[in-house]
Image (cartoon, rainbow, N blue to C red; front, side, top):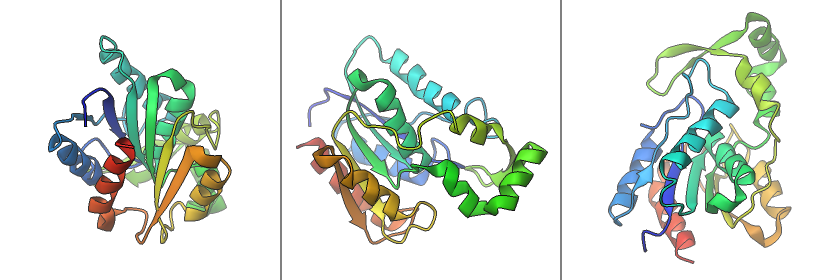
Length: 217
């Protein structure tokens, strides 16, 4: 594969650029002579994470690579999958292809299922809620994460060929969301269903194979 594109992988919520999937993918890319950028989306911190701040991290990476002006091929996991699609929607001329792993579409509404209506109310009233960060350390995440998320579309429109890889046993972001998304976008979006859960940790080799097959089409 020619090194004619820039590559990036966007991590999920409560994760970091040191995520196991990201590092696994980076190693696979390196074996093919390609550099996979792993930006830290926790801007300015995990506690103060917002969608807008995370998108800004991708903006910054794009500016750093501006001298080449090659287009991006971006993968993303869960929230990172949503962010990859949203960044492509905002910058359609900068993105060539997307690979979305269990993308967190409609995640704002999904939070009410994950932590319950009372949990959401308490999060808003208290202003923050404790989550473990990518290193397993507790952090008080601001409710601004939810407020800011509501300013972005739940289902961003991808402008380029997109591959979705989603675990059929995913209980965090049910596969039905990706089935709906792929079926309503015609030939632009392809869905591959994997026998795995939201982490996709049992499917890493398959994911690498699917990514490079897609990139080489």
